[in-house]
Amino acid sequence: MICAISGTTPQDPVISPNSGSVFDRKLIEGYIAEHGTDPISGDALSVDSLISIKTSITPAPRTPAQASIPALLQSFQNEWDALVLETLTLRQELLKTRQDLSTALYYHDAAVRVVAKLTKERDDAVAELQTLTQREL
Image (cartoon, rainbow, N blue to C red; front, side):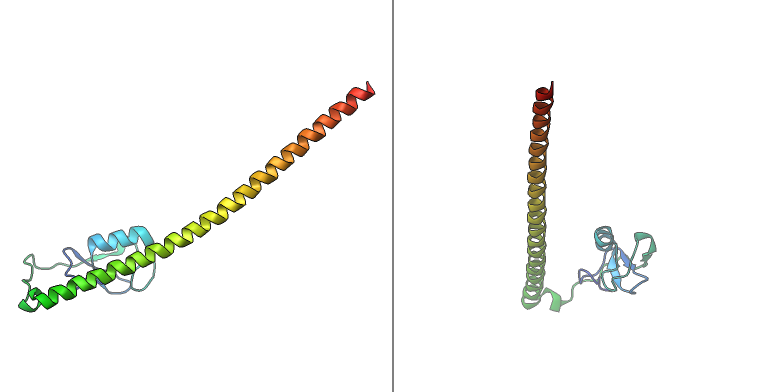
């Protein structure tokens, strides 16, 4: 059993009824809390619908191939690639958020200017009205 998110053996394995994929409970609960969907199928998923899998308590030992230098280097490379992809995603989200913020600031500034202009026009109209009423008296 391999977790579909991390690619490692899950400590507390669960199955998603939507995709039939195996996940580590902590990882999938975090993903569901953030996105509310199954990471494989994209369908709506809740923590209550996850199905626990009973496994033996004894962890499987690492094979010599997994403990070799090339395997460790490959593992480090995979982790690095995952970090780079995550960083790219975060930078793209940051750029989009900055653009959204810039647009919102522009609209807010325009609204403040309109309100200031209308307030000035109102004050001028009130002053003009007072001047006219004083002349008539």
